[in-house]
Image (cartoon, rainbow, N blue to C red; front, side, top):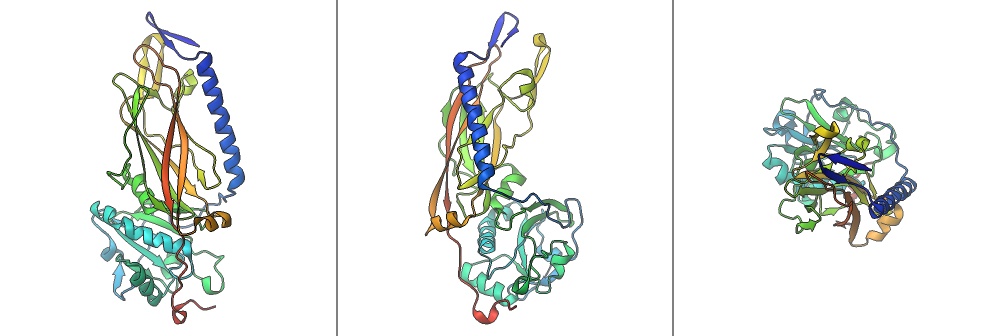
Length: 372
């Protein structure tokens, strides 16, 4: 394919470029197949109050026996509220509650307070809070009144688990209106608070921890991530900041219909995680007057993000031991162009490291535990 602008040619595909594109496309198809066989997640929607709704009343006590309401919990920019199953018997929940504590300083620096709600007693919450150094309000909803009011009571909870919610997080504005909602169809899969921070603010909360810039053909890359430490079932963001050289652009989604090669990130297949579709930021439009085309491009610093979900299979959990480093590798595919020509497609290797921690399996003292 050859496109002309004035007397200058925009060179796109030669034999070597064709081969690179075909090889990359094969890798995409292979990874998609492997991912679908490793994970069989339900797509059933989770019920409950939605974005744009005003929250029901919140009135209960925290782990210290202090009365709490939405008005006492919210910050200047609202409240991040985690609904969790139990701080006693649910290892995924306990990990989530600890991650919320770790993320607290970053959210509060933005004026957002944090809190959690479970059907646990004050005694269970106080025991866990003391043991793990939790300082945010952990709300006790022993009769599941608040859980029911939010519409997220899990009917599958039976026996000692009767009254649990579907686990998830709401971001609520100061006037009590739900701004964002983060729920998964699998109880083991959890959005990390840092992943939510990156989603809300468009940057990783781990500022200053990015690796050294990568000098690639016609651009510079910076790799970062929402979380350095996670647990099984956690969802986190892998971030790629692309900084094109002067007068250089890459092609954004929508450009493929004109025959241009859109920048893509493809992670290598693994049974240790599931990769979701790449998220692109808004692009700008570039007008090729003589071609009568207006094409979406990225010509300035651009942040691409890819959510991954750490495995929560029995085999993976057994492999964690006292903790292990998970290597996440992949390829950034792009074709850079300047004002006059396009260069050969590039397959740039990328890599992240995530430390996976084991579960906290310590229970509350026997007298405090939920009974059948």
